[in-house]
Amino acid sequence: MITLLIQDTTQALQDTVNGVNQALTQPEPELHFIDLLFKGGWVMLPLALLAFLALIIFVERYLTIKKATKDESNLMGQIRSYIQSGNLDGAMSLLRNNNSPLSRMLQKGLKRIGRPIKDIEGA
Image (tube, rainbow, N blue to C red):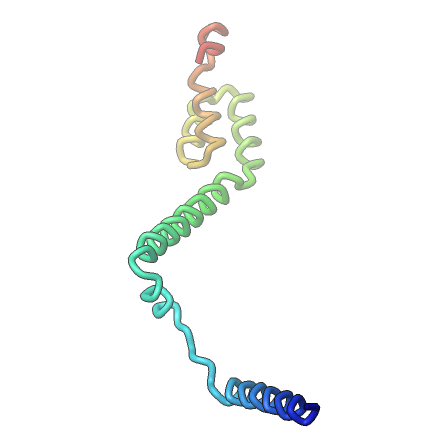
């Protein structure tokens, strides 16, 4: 009886070792991105298109925010000197030539100079 158990255990151990050896000797198949897309079926096409669209939106938003966060301390000093000297046309010209959110906001504010306070608050 014990001999039978030992033979059975030995056979199971030998089968396990053979399975491990076969797994180690067989090369792992390479998976390419395109192969995975084709294996995924038709659902992968909308997913790939949406991923590409998300990437485009991410890059566009990144560039827009980076452009909007430029340091514009020099612009404020120039505008201040134009306004203090009474040269509103020069200030408006400088703001028109500078394409930034700050310059557009200042340009709207300078257009409202001289109007009644109620009109400015209503805008």
